[in-house]
Length: 93
Image (cartoon, rainbow, N blue to C red; front, side):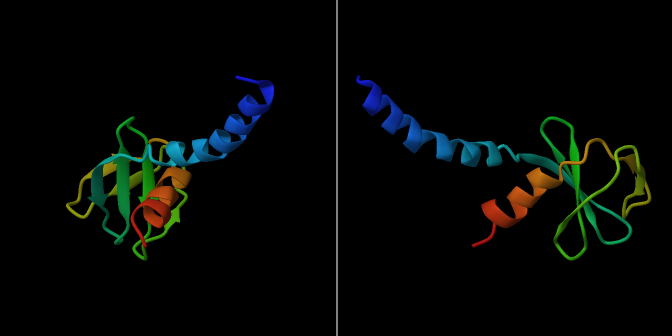
């Protein structure tokens, strides 16, 4: 394969790589909170917060939250970008 063909192939493949990274948003557990928001936990154990209005919001790591059932959980990670990708790009038309 010539250098020219290699460059052409790379120029077509490289822009598509970030799209594959966004698909790594496997949510394994969603827990509703007392205030109406939801905490989502991903396969790797990190979490992200979704407001009661359906938008991804920041939550500082280590913050204690109360679930709708009255249990307390602690935020691990702050995966806003992963949740944003899941909400807006993967599941909505």
